[in-house]
Amino acid sequence: MTDTIAASLPAAIEWRRTLHRCPQPAWLELFATAFIAEKLAAWGYEIKMGRDIIAGQQLLPPNADQLARAYDQALKAGASEKYLAPAKGGHTGVVAILKGDRPGPVVGFRFDIDANETDETTDPGHRPVREGFASANPGCAHLCGHDAHAAIGLLLAKHLAANRAVLRGTVKLIFQPNEENLGGAAALIASGIIDDLDYLLSGHIGLALKETGHICLNVHSFMALSRFEVTYTGRPSHAALRPDEGKNALLGSCAAIANLYAIARHGLGASRINVGYHQAGTTWNVIPDKALFRFETRGVSNEINAYMVEKAHEIIRGAAQMHGLGVEIVPAAVASVAENSPALIALAEKTAATLPSVKHIVPSVAFNASEDVTLLMQHVQNRGGQALVALFGTPVGGGHHNSSFDIDEQVIANAATFYSAMLSAIQGDRP
Ligand SMILES: [Zn+2]
Ligand SMILES: [Zn+2]
Image 1 (tube, helix red, strand yellow):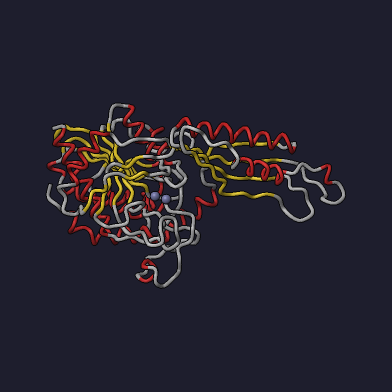
Image 2 (cartoon, protein in one colour; image 1 turned 90 degrees about the vertical axis):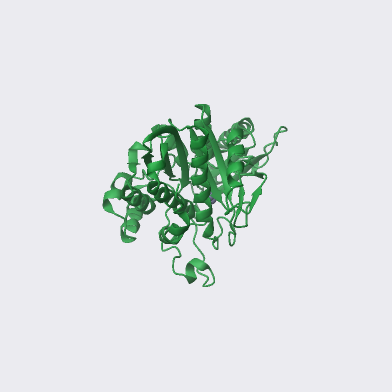
């Protein structure tokens, strides 16, 4: 392949900055969806969008107000109505397909595109502020680098389109919505769009790799995860006159939350539990009749996570019984454990060693968190394919999900170069 990546990096940086300026969270990535789809269509890709790629039960779908606001933001930022239309109801994301003239494997590349529901700093020393591409959408910002992931995908797409004549087999570029709330991968799988993948490659910038030019191909220890939203319903009453007539949902939820953290640790491996959001009651003198909280469990194996889920449900129901409350536990997200395919790690390490953009191959990194790419990996591997997640080094400002997160944009070219080299290696592997 002719290398067009370095020459296109300035354009890719512009795309990343344009995406950074209009960040949108899970299922609301309307601007990114239209921006990406329009470019890929212009470069000759077959485009799949909307219900063709997002199926099954959408966990925690956005409401009509959120969708209307996100649509307005996207339009104002210059998105094309034609490419907004398929995603308008919250069916965001794009899958772009490029077929070579010669037979070969189906190779998928997955890029997540959603932003975080947190404000970006307005500190004039923060580069996006200083250089005029900070988030224009209050309450939302790209603080995990998924704007760069999307730019990596676009840079790779442009490069592969320019080299279409030498392409073997099929390339599927998967721009996945809703990674942060871990809902996008399951919806993609439900649509069948990744059923034909022989290979799946994905990656994340930064995380444990803080130096540009560092790469890790042996990323392990993904944690299985489950998230739930819990609602308690009680009965309101006057706090002075008849507190005995009330059913206190706030007390029930507090009892549950305190005891969730007291689940006995599993002896066979690490687990986690966290309640990240809690809301209850209305005012001083009313026994609170409603409470809502969001919690998640994790485990180093699917079994340990299942143990945490089971114990958590017992506690939540027990607290409801103790306080005479109704309770609803709604699943909100799931991620699995997964492992990079050993043969693909070997091929990736051999390939990375030939790249001038790679200064150091970090032997292994424990991910120690959760990612829904694991669901995609398992789906591909269960059907006989191979999958790999890489890490691409870059400094990360204040850190991931921090309001002053920032990156070295060189990582966009570094990652795209690696993906392109892997495609060549895979095609050489299976001519
Ligand atoms: Zn993140
Ligand atoms: Zn991320």
